[in-house]
Image 1 (spheres, rainbow, N blue to C red):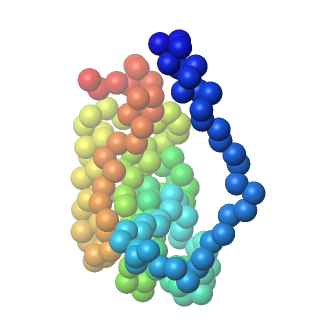
Image 2 (tube, helix red, strand yellow; image 1 turned 180 degrees about the horizontal axis):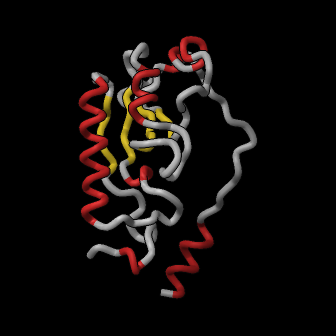
Length: 154
């Protein structure tokens, strides 16, 4: 093996390219898949001008906490309020991060009954909002280490 490795190794030489040429007129094919979105990139009042700053990007998914405000992990980004703001942008959807409605980091676990009551409450408010620009739910965020062991429900 040592002899073969040495023979093969001696015959291969690599050189760095001095110049790279990109021909923007040469089309291999059209795009088949693209994605864009953000994590709390749009909240209740930022950015101010959605039509000029957001709509031209044709955004697809914004990830926001189910609830924003006092008692939640973040005081901003409430998914229902953000979905209402985005309703004028046809491509925009909101992905709902349920865990981020819990307070603090690591999350302060309220027990299974408390958690399910919060989820039910949010789902009812979401239905009542009339918004249809939803992408989906993120049930739990970073399960390995987001709450202290003594709060564990398993």
